[in-house]
Image (cartoon, rainbow, N blue to C red; front, side, top):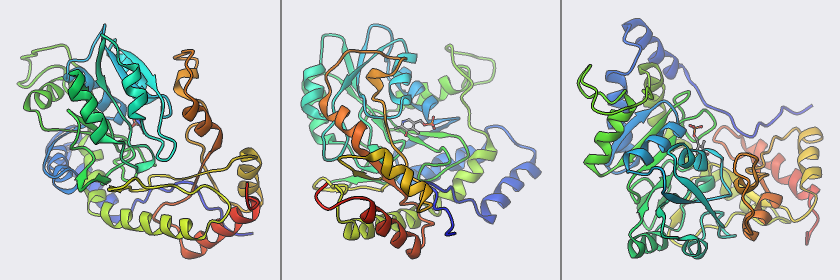
Length: 362
Ligand SMILES: *Cc1c(COP(=O)(O)O)cnc(C)c1O
């Protein structure tokens, strides 16, 4: 029986293990120098020197970033419905209301026309997601934000290193969040990194992360404990030295799949976009469940459906909205393995299995 090809595989090497061990030996386990160095290195390696603040998860990063940007009760923030629930959850946790907009069918990111239609007198910001590692249409969203006096944020949880017109994601919005969960393009175990170029947002983020304290026991505001540990930062620092090699591998794997898949809708790239293929997502127009099951059971290939239920229809949000592109995508998308540890034999197995299971013209 051939080995099982998983949908994702976190890569942890001896160097990550040694870095963790060094922190354990040092006894400085909580947030300290490793976290500070991780922030500085992340800033240099991934966001062209913008400030970076590390937190204990991507979701905390979005939540605290929104609070630091002044979002709160009475505000509305426009988000895609076609994303992981953490995007809208973080808006709701501030006391603001997430307003769901539709996506562009080619790239699965927020549709600027749908965003414009969702603007009300309460709208305070727009939070696009660079879904699957493909940058959202930031120039159009920036124009809409400026024309309407709105803030613009970025959920870059899946898009470490992606760029648009030569500009890295994480440098467009008032702040951007990168997740460091194990299945993302790089990991710290759990964790998040928030990038910004506003010293005020940066300072408020640092306060909110640590009980509102800059100086110990001189609490300036009501904050959280959302600190990253030195243990997690040590893993992240090693992963930063590998992220560009892995990204290149993801791009090569995606190019191979796109060249050889014959009967499915392959991912499209917007002009000027350089995606990082957090997911390689095809559309299958019928029989998705059968294809998923056959890939798993007959071909030993793992896949993912991100996301089968749009956020506006989740029990946690329950909004009666008509978002046709979101509905179509949630029924058709299928993500194939694209992670950097795939072998050329794995890639050939994926292509031949998918081509066999999908009929020409379907
Ligand atoms: C993973 C993810 C998050 C949340 O990140 P965590 O680190 O898991 O909290 C938010 N938004 C999107 C689009 C994600 O994929």
